[in-house]
Image (cartoon, rainbow, N blue to C red):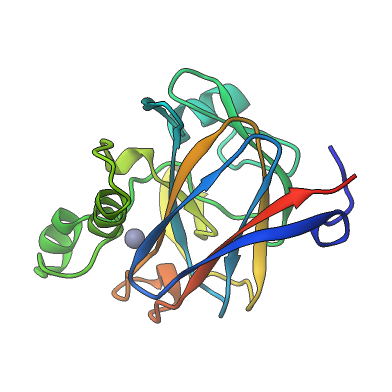
Amino acid sequence: MSEIPIEERGRMVEEVHVPARTAAVVEVRRGQVLQVVDLEGQQVGDLMAYRQGDPSEYLSPGHTLSCLVKLMPETGDELFSNHRTPLFRITRDDVNTHDMIVPCCDPERYGRDYDQPDHPSCLASLQKALAEFGSDFAAPGESAWNVFMNNRHEDGRIVTYEPEHGPGSAIDLEVLEDLVVALSACPQDLSPCNAYDPTAMAMRVWEVED
Ligand SMILES: [Zn+2]
């Protein structure tokens, strides 16, 4: 794994803007680097990833925790599918807090906990983006990885804190299989998840140059 920043050893070939409270899709190929960027800071992204040609295999936070035998992935770790195939490897991480336990926010979450069933949600955003991409991929909420989420585990409880990272913070993911990736800029403005102010994100695709 190279420790040289991708900006110094690669060429950006695509950038997908993810406006606040929406989701977007990008396709990546094995060998590329997918960079998830928080443009304005203190923002969480919910990421789903599917294998090209077989979307029944997808990134699974639960299987990743099982394979890693830890609650928080770290730089150098691989992220696994529901069939325990490595799909990504973390090569840089500006933030180091990423929840892999709770599902993404969904209409039921806002209805049950806030009496706002029509509130925007990551699940609805991801389903909309995947449909607009032309797919009929299943999008179960528990398959979303909560990138940059500052959840801590305290005496058996899961406690959400405001993110502490600033604008431009990124995580770089070496792509290990051809994938379709969907990212939601989480619209949660009723908990500390996004510091009560959802903002935009970006996905940047880098080609590695030797
Ligand atoms: Zn969300």
